[in-house]
Image (cartoon, rainbow, N blue to C red):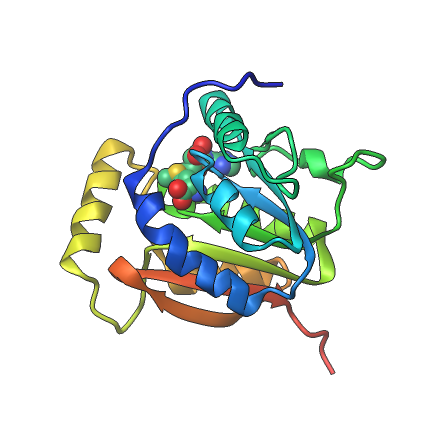
Length: 215
Ligand SMILES: C[S@@+](CC[C@H](N)C(=O)[O-])C[C@H]1O[C@@H](n2cnc3c(N)ncnc32)[C@H](O)[C@@H]1O
């Protein structure tokens, strides 16, 4: 349980929320239940819940201060489809709390959204995200990730190279991930990359779905 606290502000979230929402509206069906992983400040949660009125949106994060900020944003911008309270969820801790039965936030989820976590968490979080998504998504569910990636055979922007160096200097376990490594972890979990969308500021939005069973 967290108490509404300081509303944190991320200028990057403010900049990217409109283009991300446009993609969510493009790829998601009109209604469903969304589990947001690594919700951070909570700005995305309130913006996307408002822009996707047919979706129930459940923000999560492992960090207590982030949970406080998400709750504070939810108080400032109340939306009936923003599910309270924000949940404490660390992708590395299995089972995820949403895997309990008989709780309002129990799986299955129609979609999972995770922005800007993979590069700012140890690499093991990628496999944990993919495996967890495969466990809690509905059969036709989608995992949507957003953030910077390195792409083999494609030049990396100077901004992303500098960002990657800065991340690794702050924590050697962090760093911008190779897209093919992320896709390989998804495949291991039974998820396929279905759509890849170039986003402003050299970011990508990726849509994963369950791999078709072999014919
Ligand atoms: C850069 S912030 C991104 C916040 C928000 N999604 C956004 O795009 O503005 C990274 C977030 O990842 C979360 N995070 C780090 N390790 C995690 C883990 N093991 N499981 C889930 N979230 C994690 C942090 O608590 C933090 O809120």
